[in-house]
Amino acid sequence: MTLAAPERALAWSQLCFRAMGTDVRLSVLGDPTLLVGARRRVEELEARWSRFRPDSEVGRINRSTAHLVAVDEETFHLVALAVRGWRDTDGRFDPTVHDALCAAGYDRSFEDLAPVAGDGADVPGCAGIRLDPRYDGVSVPAGVRLDLGGIGKGRAADLVAEDLVTAGARSAIADLGGDLRIAGPPLDQPLVVEIDDPHGAGAAAATVRLREGALATSSTAGRRWTVDGEVRHHLIDPTSGRPATSGLASVTVLAADAAWAEVLAKAALVAGEAEGVALLERHGTPGLLVTDGGRGRTAAAFEEHLA
Image 1 (cartoon, one colour):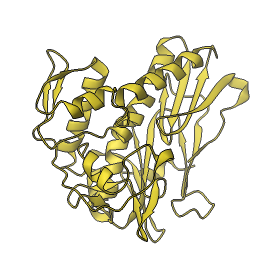
Image 2 (cartoon, one colour):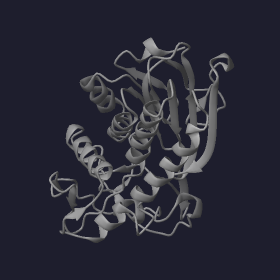
Image 3 (cartoon, one colour):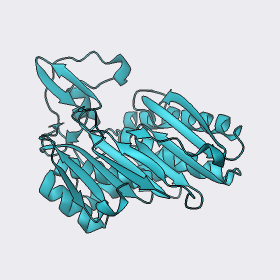
Image 4 (tube, rainbow, N blue to C red):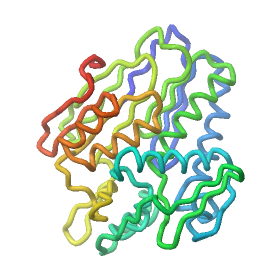
């Protein structure tokens, strides 16, 4: 996905860097020095939520089987949101795919990936996860390890954009690898966002205009690797414990916040075209689904947002 630069007359400032295994683009209408603190914020959230860092809070949760782990409030709410996403999508979104991702070969940061042969693994689901709001405590049962990579990027976009406005920016945009959030009052000039064609044909799959809210895309094209001649990707179907083969190549969702858009985009892609459209319609969430054959299908009045 590409992000059209806002009009220069509005005095936007922008900062681009790598974090959370993706390209980060932060834009602010206001004091450009706010972007320095925003970058630190993204890096701090990565340090808390990465499954690849043994000293992260997610790492501590995954190592402390059946024991309540006290975490910071933001991590607690992220886990709670992931569990809610699992429940509200009938398990299509599942943060307990950690071991299945490793079994598929995605056992380290994507930049360092050296795929090894492996098969699927069970995805246990969230039923046994214990959340104690009195202590911001999280406990996972034996055999459960969390991966909060996708929803973590979406939540980071939400938090950073909101923080920039709280710190004095008139408006802010945070884009973490396609998980995008606009904070502040509706933009005077709409943001033009090109949604990448997952088949790499060059042209955008669609172009939308946003004045507020969030957008997220889940795609099988972004993180792919090959094991013994088999092409794999990072979107795991919880019912099989293997990379999803739903017939969809990407799903883009518009929502009020990026974390929830991420949940529904991933769930719809795993569900497949018919069930994915039904899922988005049930939540009243506009979406664009692109099939493996390149055909587009919309849900919940997505057309109203097209440029």
